[in-house]
Image (tube, rainbow, N blue to C red; front, side):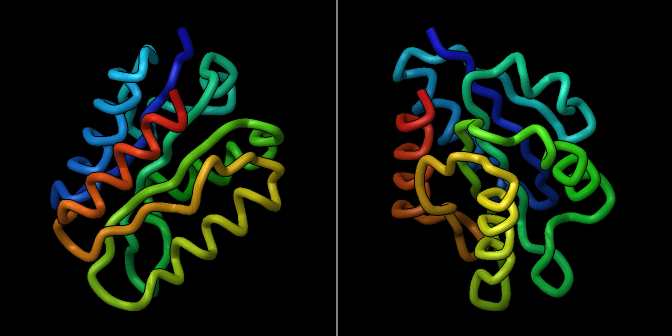
Length: 140
C-alpha cells in the first residue's frame, strides 16, 4: 500500500474541495492518505510518503500563499529529487501563471510531476474535480 500525503492551504474552501477529491480517489485506489497543513509538513515528513499532492491557490500577483505555503515549499525544494508529486489549486484572476511557475520550480528541483497541475477557476467544477480524482488515482 502506498502512502500519499495531501498537503494544502485553502482560504475559501475551493482548494480544500480539490484536496478532498484527490484524497478520496487515492484512497479508493488503495493508498493510505494523510491530509496535512503546510505547517505540519517538512523535508523530514516528505521521506515518509511515496507520493505527495500539494495544493495552494493563486494569491496576490499569481504566487503561492506567502505566509505558510511558500516557506514550506521552499524548504522542501532541496528534497524533491525523484519524488512523485502532483500540484493543484484554485485561482480567481490571471491565466494560471502561478501554476506554470510552480510546475517549473518542482521540475527544476528534480521532482517527478505525475501530471500537469490541476487548476480550478474559483469553485472547482465537475471537470476540475474529475482532474483532481485523476491526480489522486495516479498518485496511488
